[in-house]
Amino acid sequence: MPFIHITVGKPLSGPGKQRVCRQATQLIADRLAKRREVTSVLVESVANNGWTINGEPPDDSALTHVHTDILITAGTNSSEEKSQMIAAMHAMLGKELGVLPEASYVVIRELPATDWGYAGSTQAARRQAGGGL
Image (cartoon, helix red, strand yellow):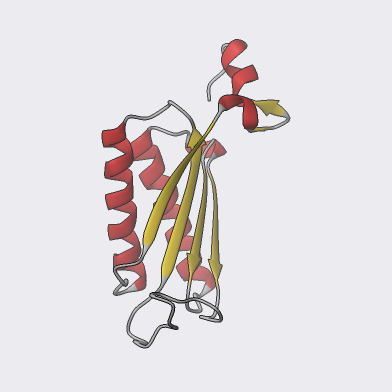
């Protein structure tokens, strides 16, 4: 039940957002073996209002600023799988959005199974009941 939140520092069309959502969903299914049907992706386009790198607003309009947060259940993926996911997500975003600045982060946050869930049940409860995470 991953959640992926991608913030893009430029306007992005509806079809562009949909492509990024579909590709992010595919990556998490392929790289981290997560179930597509419970994967949620939010892509937000924001103007560069307040976005800085090195304390300064972006000065190169050719760069697309982006930040990605990925939430997964703790202990469900290896370090190598997470490393591959970060590389694949960065590459996909660069292909879809254009040149990314060096300070474009993909962050994977691991939450304890007791601290989140979907459809009214925690991941820990699903595990205890023999259901899939």
